[in-house]
Length: 511
Image 1 (tube, rainbow, N blue to C red):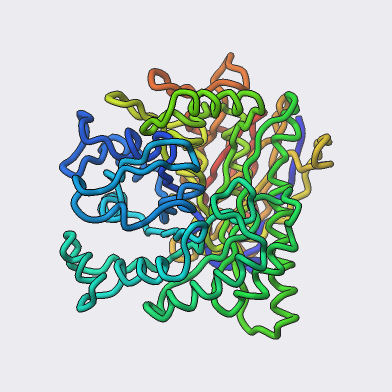
Image 2 (image 1 turned 135 degrees about the horizontal axis):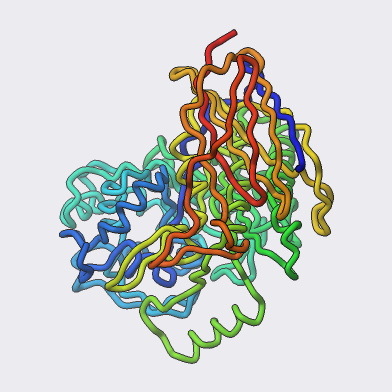
């Protein structure tokens, strides 16, 4: 058995838990919208055409903010196509995903869905093929009360009250050559600055996210952030990060340690943003919006074959795209990503797991069929529900595992929160070992443990290997009670099975 010792001190906190850290993403891609969240003919569909079985799972999962409508899709999208009478909306070719977009679902429908799902909207604008005019006009349409052409048009289209969208993305992945309207950092920085100014002239209360690097392996990474922020620092509140991870060459140990790369990515962007702040003598800090992250099996030839099949079959409405089936291993990795985001919650104020339904998603659905939870659903759902109050800074002394891609990593990965109002500490733990259980001792400083409120474990069922996953017919990976958790006045002890993720809630009193 391996071991780890974790120390949590009441006075060692890094900030409040940002509620927007538990965000998701809906893009007009594959079956995320059509037959995902929206399917008027489905047996569970409500009067708005929304699948209530999916809505129930979304509410259970608990995302607080959802980014819309893309993603690559937004860089060629005209927002006007998705408003007004549905029968008059144009059908368009979407070059980003080689599909036919009907525009049956647009801004009004998404605002209606977001209210029913109880999520905040994070609206992205097209800075690929469009620019300043379209950006400011969308803000006026969405947020101005009335008395102008665009705000009155919204009212004519059925929304008397403003949508009051506060959070806006200034484009998507424009550092990427694959993006429609790809730009250099200087081209994007200048455009984003002018769009931001014009949008704030319409509504000065909005918050703005500048496009950062699509991943830390981009050849322009670092230079992109520095150049863009030099232009837009005073106009924006956040810079974005995107990252996807997968297992390479059956190297599970490296895959299970990939949150170390996420840590490095986050800390590098913080350093760059703070360097621009110092050089420009700015007073505010730019915070981070990690608005796309997940496990995504971009399997080389498999992905190329899929793209080829889509293009060969012509322009189709909502074809199946990257509907990855997630395993127990993936769920543990996602748990470590959530730990990384939470540990950096003093600067990462927004994060969006991509995407919500069907497309690399924690929720799957079938047309005219069922909806179900994938394995990665559980770490997100439990952390979104339980992580409240202040983020604790854990001191961890763990046995280590050597990995080919990321060097040594702690076998036990940890994050923790302290909800002072309810006198409760929550621990989120992952055991990265494929073979060995881990004995964990948690020492409390400034707290006195009183009782275990709940202890849950996500692990592969008996006899199943690490590739076990959930299907419409069988939920094989799910939370169950973690037994053997013991408390004393000064701490907690528990054992984590190999390849597992756990959440432990403890009622505490101040020493």
